Amino acid sequence: MTPLDRRGLLMRALALGAVAPLAACNYEDPAHPDLADRFLHMMSAWNDRVQAALFNPHTLAPTFRPDQITHPPRFNAYYDISQVVTVDPATYQLELGGQIQNKTPWTLAALDGLPQTQQITRLVCVEGWRVIGQWGGVPLGEFLRHVGADTTCRYVSFRCADNYYSSIDMASALHPQTILATSFLGAPLTPPFGAPVRLRIPTKLGFKNPKSLMQLAVTNVFPGGYWEDQGYNWFSGS
Ligand SMILES: Nc1nc2c(c(=O)[nH]1)N[C@H]1C(S)=C(S)[C@@H](COP(=O)(O)O)O[C@H]1N2
Ligand SMILES: [Mo]
Image (cartoon, rainbow, N blue to C red; front, side):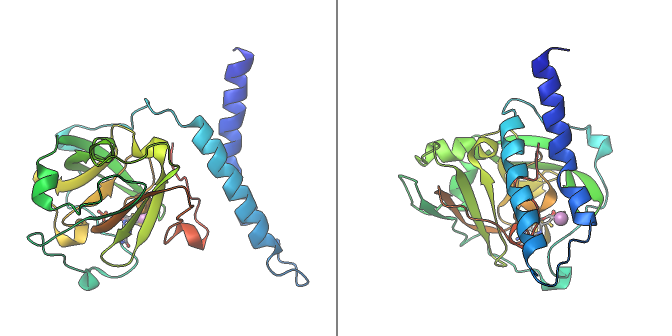
């Protein structure tokens, strides 16, 4: 093992182990009620930086065979499936903001006109379940270059029809498996699973895969996210 390999292993071990043991401890201090919170947020921010440093833009998430696809798929959101917001695909417009040259909103037909890709990948939820599914759509990197996004910016942020929101680092946005998905199992996305357009990013946890996207922005201002702002690790990926 070279010293560099050893350093890589140590960094990985630290990145994986840093948050869990701390979260399990009870750091409650009546005199400083938010001390534990602040400490955990500081550690999580540090963890984000380590994960970003370890991220290899060429390492692919595992892919699977069609017979490994999970049936039926599993729905998840911060509300019950009966509360799903339906977006009309015929009048759908994806609004663009931030450091993007051409901010003309995108229709579904226009998205369908860009180069398409398919993937059979696994979605992993922090709740402890995982599903394998097939998603199709436009590579986000392809889309960003097409609209003249400043890809030297740090973040791509997303807002959804149900007010969910999330954001990812630019390196992960440009990863070949990160797609603006419009199809699931070869058919258009259905409302519970993010119709008309969702982010599918198999290198990150499920909550970093916002559904029913209404706005996309490129920015250097940290955008956070629905679960991220409640303490979930922001990078949440490999
Ligand atoms: N708009 C929106 N997107 C969302 C969520 C949500 O509540 N609203 N939940 C996230 C979480 S926690 C998970 S695990 C995945 C679930 O995606 P699925 O329903 O396709 O399995 O969607 C993510 N994207
Ligand atoms: Mo999730």
